[in-house]
Length: 265
Image (cartoon, rainbow, N blue to C red; front, top):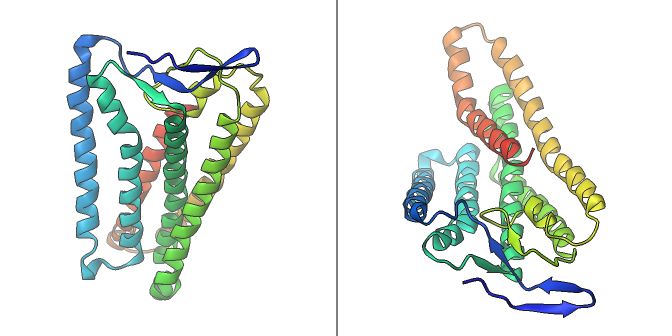
């Protein structure tokens, strides 16, 4: 059942909660969607936990595996921010989410997403050092530098998340209160505002370009240097072996960038 709790302020009805539309309103699909996403979520959690368990082995204490453990944590955190609420909605008629809960979910989604993007840029730099300056790799990418890059990624993600969430939730929402999405996200929330959102939309586009464009440029520059260095290697076997150390990271970047582009652009 949808809650009708609302408060009046001036000429606007201020919303105290939202209703998520979900993926489908067809009752016959709810259990199928539940088991499908429950299975995917379980695989995500188990897979990333296995990555963390395997990479703590003493022989895998390099910076690459340190970043991989952090990336696994961010991946599980992002999924855990969205999927549990979605799974409950599949089995319940109540798809409401409190105003505070929606703001918290939006903050977490942006924070983990932006942090992961910055971390991928840090991992690209790590691969650049390993490929282009292998003799000094252990010195350059020491534990202090790795930790600093992770903290910088988290701080950058936090700044982006706080600013974006504050911008959204300082706007008045006066109905309808139904979010046309399966979680609280910026585009569907903007549609619920009863004020002119053109300035906010421009700010959001500028912030998004800044958040995505800066790490993306760093990744492009890193891989341009990596490819240039690999092409200078005379042996085909050595070129393949060197590039194979970067291939997994490159695949993750492509998948992350492609999914984000399809979702928002």
